[in-house]
Image 1: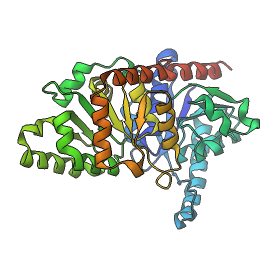
Image 2: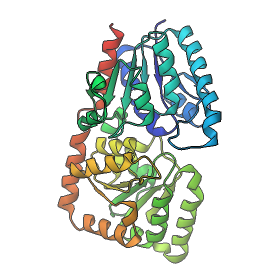
Image 3: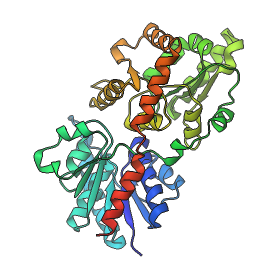
Image 4: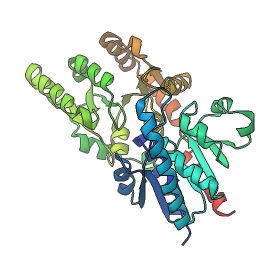
Length: 373
């Protein structure tokens, strides 16, 4: 039976947008979808939770700096290529759709060798290294922002299609009351949803810890700490219980929220987060104003700064850069937003407008055209 291959991984930011497209494509066509991802890490659990069959391959990371690990990972990349080749030969898919991340490169190269069409999607404002490699083998390159086209060579321009960044359809029809029930919301304070993506964000967690008395006095705080920072969330809660027991019910830490994420976002009044593409586009789909603390260059390639600046320029967010992200600055920024409800309302409207075209549907329709070829 004919099928299609999705590939990508390394973080939830490369997987959840792909799952969003897969859900729409499967619903509209019924075609079987198979995912190729890393045989290490959490790729398999994320994909299988969406009821998508998963094939794991060796995955070597593509680094832009010198590291002895690069030598080892060369062999992993080669192994991933041959593993992908075997999978594609056996399944004979109609096309390969890549959502990026280092694990996506071997399947895309293998598909090109077998003359299987490749469609790749870049979620960030500027293309990552995997996309720069995959575009050489891709028949079509999908981008989230019109201005991203400026980063591609002239030879690739004819392959480009602007789609936005896909998020799961549940984010457009989430239930705020279910979200409030999940977080055990009490009182009438605005809900501040603090998140740093699937891996958490240490800088944001530290800021929350430093300003928790102010935050809990002003907001009902939902804090996604990241699984590896679970203890930090518990420490913050214990501090509140000891110093301000009357505020302890206003702070709810979670290691990571998956299934309930759309409902929690729907219940939120303000989102404070990094500026990873998946995080901010999900917040946009929910129509939420954002306070963004992007990873700086050095900690990343600078893509989060570009994402944050775009959303800020569109009026959907305000940005607090790492060098300025002191406890005082954070409290000042939040106070300004709370005291200006009209600004929050305008930011929410701008946010909603950015994701209004439902990119997952748009991309699924483009992929159906490849199925017809």
